[in-house]
Length: 243
Image (cartoon, rainbow, N blue to C red; front, side, top):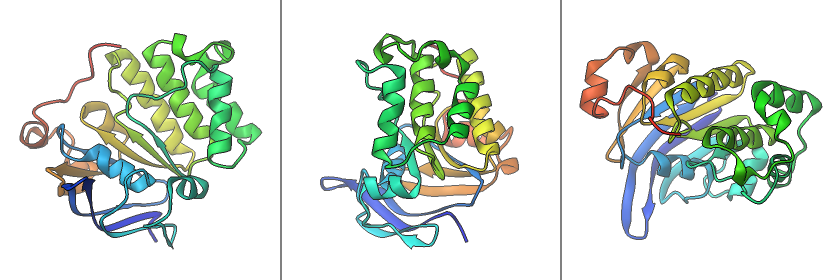
């Protein structure tokens, strides 16, 4: 049984539909990468799965439970945790305070093992625990955002364009961390536009274009694929260039 199963999901904003009958599944322990150009509906898909954006039609099941009408808090409590695009840290709160927020949001407490893993994964945060998050670099803020999600003990971690705004060297480190998270058994739904590093960690790929899934399959099908790069993504195989 799939951990996450989306069938015929359509949604949008106001009267404008942005997703059209999307079918998607994430298996236990799998990293599924959703690729697509700007405006394809990738962020809307992530928000619909986490409950921020309600589905207009179709159904969502998580570990066999129907969560189509469940609110974001209920889904977080079940283990669906999203790292929003743009990091969204609380700038006036310290790193430690940002991490504690996750415990209240998901109504859970990070285990000692999770805390140890997080600070080993993002070692720079150990010396920044008392520093307001707004004073951190973009790369450090992304570490806080993902660490906060891990403190909520996710079963499905949704990462929405985590490389956005980061320099290539930082992107490499970020994807090493994502690989280690996957190796712990956490399922990952990775939303990306920049492809190269994402294909190195993915198990499967789904390609979203104009609100519809237009292709998909094992990652081997898409590695070194000029058709994918230039047909769907405009050639974006590199990393972002600021950060």
